[in-house]
Image (cartoon, rainbow, N blue to C red; front, top):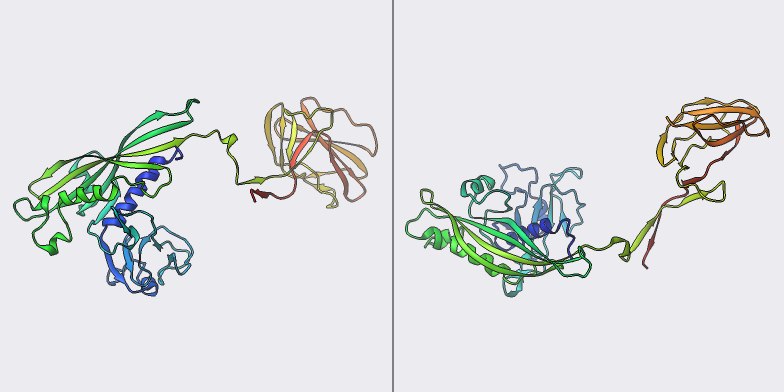
Length: 395
């Protein structure tokens, strides 16, 4: 089941990834991971070995495509993540090994991560209007290109409880942009010269490549049911520049479950222990100490209670106490007003509790000898953190 909150983004990014692995231009391949690591990651364009964000290279020794992620800070593990030598550990930029279960169309012996060549100069998410000029600006006029555009969805409820289970039809347009300055129908059919055709096979072939790759595909995502091919058409023409943009429509069937999270079985749960104490027969859920506010013992008489918080009549009050000079050989009661200020009242040791000031919350009392606070206790209900967090796992 998909998470309804990010299903569109997940599918968009996966379409970009799959189209890129299938058809995106590869920079010159390298022999092994050591040669990949030696490439210049700091974009010194005087060097033949440069790393471009989202650039792909095939590594012969491992038979895999690696993608350069210019934002990655992952740790170099010598196999799946490779950091160029010239990039410090704290600087972004890593080669990431690509792996996918998706194959190049119905050729099930050719997973996309072993494809060694491609022609598309750009494969990106497109958020603009269906306009050739705007699309060219988005890709900085680099062609041929594939652009992934989400165009809407349809939800159909499939559960007795409304809002729980849906079948979804996601609608996407894969925009294909191709150019050929040769005459006749070369922009559609591709150049008659094989060397030029390899760099741009023409609009018709690009739209066919999209269909070949994605017909019936589950996209390598566990939540996708299948992909249905829709109509294709030429949506823009620029005869002066011999530029054409076509659109291939896709419908991606997805299942979305918006689960009642209170009923979901957990794999592990983090436990935050609390020590709870009630001074009366029933814990007062509206007024209690939530954290801190104790007075440290054996640290002298001039001291501030710990910072903390209380609920008073349902209102949370955060408190950062100031230093107080406690009276020696006394019991000192501390009461909190609604502004978060302590009021201290000292009485002889073992005397009855003094009267509580009006409009205050009695937090606790401290007993002192001649030089230190020797005892401290809460006088209100309390539910305070106790000990360290720990995790309970399913196993």
